[in-house]
Amino acid sequence: MSILTIFKQDLEHGLRGEGFTTRKIEQFVRVFHKIESSQGDMLELDSTRAMLVNINGTEQGLCLEDFITAWWVYWVVVFNQSTDAATHHQAIGAIRALFFVSACVKSTSQKSTMQTWWQECAPIHGCPPKLEEI
Image (cartoon, rainbow, N blue to C red; front, side, top):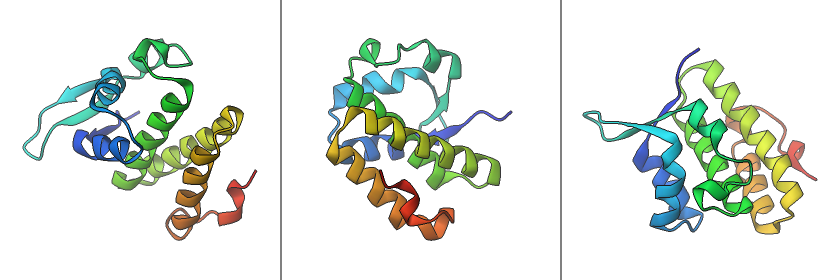
């Protein structure tokens, strides 16, 4: 199994786009290993650290909605940067799962953002745009 690695700046950009403050971003990226590269800092997923964070994100200082959004943004970045089919499918699965988990939070803005992304990217991921309607 390969270790997922993404550009830190892409994750930060996505999180800022969702209204995350610098503090919240710093709290979230603690679950990753930082790797320096000639193209910029990269974040490597540490699945052990990610699993040790309690399920509602309080150890990261995030509310449940922020916790779900942060992971959704992460998987969107993975999707956008993936070059192999296995990683691409893993990202799609995670994005779909987080969409349905977000339904439990009942955040209409979060649901809307996720639905819009799914519909706009339907030609890329190949799943019907109507699949993500609750």
